[in-house]
Image 1 (tube, rainbow over the protein chains, first blue to last red):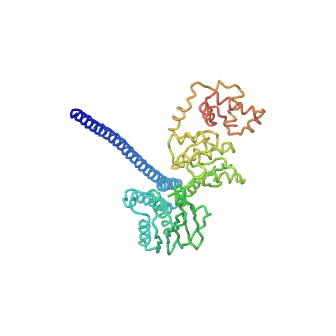
Image 2 (cartoon, each protein chain N blue to C red):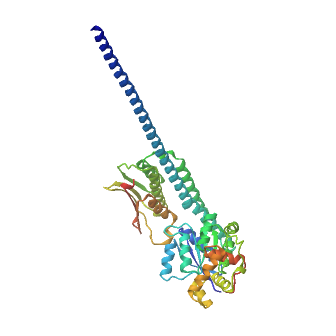
Image 3 (cartoon, one colour):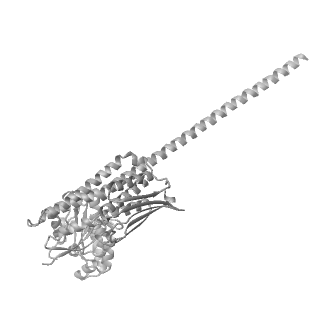
Length: 260
Length: 215
């Protein structure tokens, strides 16, 4: 009888042990499988993130390169081309025509070209431009206006817009162009920059109270205005430019939130 | 003296004005007006503005660029001579303007002497391209398998009229034949020379001295 009981006991223990061992093996096997799967998934996500990051870096770089290219073509190259044509013209003049006024004209164009080139290289190397947000960049512009001593600056900005670096740089360029024109030509007392948020868009308005000009007159359509319009178009934003004689000049840019 | 008329198309008004000032120093040319892009030129011509003999055409302009404008001009006013006047001094830009029908190709910083040279050349229905572009044309259009002797008398006459920038209707009148015949002749020449642009025909005529200045 005892013999039988012992045999049953041994069989039972063996069965339990066997089940336990099989269970452990299955568990370890499944765990490993899951871990491998998890690792693969993790690596895939990591790779994907890297690719995205690379994409956006390349995109930013491409945008910046395009911006530099446009900037050189629109401003510096045009000015130097103009200086060359003026110089050719001087060479054609009869001896009796006084040289000085035409030379002054050429020097002025070259000065502008150098100024624009300097501005461009400064902006390229300016780390701050990459990092600072649009509000603090606008504050710097306002301070710069005041430091010229020619007119006052009013800045009304109390919101933060999450802008892509390229959008930020483009907006800043447009504003700088406007300010440069106002300071140079408008004889204004105040330049006002207002940034407001609306339900579906952000609006940037910049205006001066200067002498204004006739927007239909061809001689006023310099490359500066073209640049501002072209850049706004590249941002996919709406461009509303207006100038009235003796009242002032204003520019409104509307960026839809969906395009941010 | 008959002054040849010019229109300047350039999106930078200061540059257009400066070029105008140079051209006005030449006794045999006058500038009619300036436009900022091809669309403005199109509108002006459609409104009945004077049709120029020559258009000095910038390449990169907003709304309607130089290439588009040249193609439109060629199809609408074949008698207008087009000179590309650009800052782009590369093979690709040259070929695109050549194929669009520009008889001349200049850079904006060209000295006045060369500018007047180019103007006086194109009014004679001849081409004026930079030195380096000759190699490009040679490579693009070697014409090694073809010679003027491959044309019959009718085709030769057609080519002469064609190179005077006459329209198809005008050529038909001169040759006393109907419009279909003229179109067939043009196609035949394209096929025989293995080319696809009107300027390539002009180029062939020029390298083989087939252009009749008296026409």
